[in-house]
Length: 394
Image (cartoon, rainbow, N blue to C red; front, side):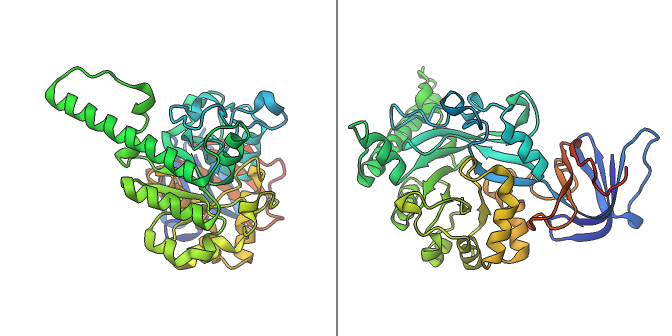
C-alpha cells in the first residue's frame, strides 16, 4: 500500500510536503518526498491519495482503562479494581480487556492506534498493565507489550476503599508501608531464586512473586497513581529506595514542583484535565501542568484516563494544553512519540520511520483543533477506519 501527497509529520524530526509512504507486511518500508521516492504500485495495490491532509503517527493513549471499565455495561462490565485485598500484583489486564467495548471503535475513529490499558487505583498494587493496539477481536493479537507496567497507587483511592472496609490502609503511611513490605518480599524472592538457580538447587516458583521480577530488573516501570505533591514525592522516595523505573501518572500538582521532578528524571503522564475536580487531591489540576513540566525538562505525555474523560478527547486535551502554554510541537509529541518512549514501545510505534509498525492517522488538519476530521486510521498496515466523505481520493 502507498500513501501519497499531503504533509507527513514523522515525529522523528522531519516534516515532508507532498510525501510518499510505502507500507509492506504491516511495516513502513519507505518514506520521503513523492518525487524522491520509488513509486511503483502493483496493479492490485492500494494507493491512498491525500490532497491537503496531515499524515502522522497514530496517536497513543498512555494510561487508560478502556475495555476493563466498559461503557454502557454498569457493574457487570467493570473489571477495573479487585477491591478485596490491597496488594494484587499478579492480576493481568489482558485477562479483563473486552475488545468489543465501544471505546475501541471511538479510539480508532479518533486516530488513536494504541493504548496502555490496565487496572485502576483502588489497590496499593493493582496489577499489570498491557500496551495494546486498538483494533481487533482477540486481545492476544493486539498485544505490543505485556506486562508493560506494574500499577501502584498512592493517596485517596486506596485510603477510601479500605478504610471503608475497616482495614488497612486507611492512611498514606500505611499505603507506603504496605508497598515497601511487598517490594522487600519481592527482592528476597528474587535473591532466593537467583541463588538456587546459580547453585542448581530445586526452587519452587511463587506465582504471586514472579510478576515482580520484570520490575526489579527494570524491564518495566512502576506505574504510580499520584496527584498531590506529597504522594508524588513518596512514590519517588520508594522507587529510589528499590532502584526501580517509574512513571508518574496524573501528576496533577506536578507544576508546583516542576524543577524537582526534572532533576529526579521520572516521566509524567498528565491528566485527565478534561474532568471535574471531584476529589480533594485533584483540586489543583490544570491544563497548564503539561507545559510547565515539559518546559522544565520532564518527559511528558497526556492521558484521558478513559473513561474519566472519553478516549476520543485525547487530541483535544493536547490542544487545550497547548492553549495553556505547551509548545505546539510538544503537543504533537505528547500524544505520539513521548508516550511511546514512556511506555517502552518506541521501537515499534510513536513515529513514522522505516521498520516501525505502519500505525498511521490521516487528518484534514491539526487533530488538536476541534473541527479537524479523521480521514483514515491505519493499524499494522491495514485501513481500519475510512471517512465516508473524506475529501481524499483512492
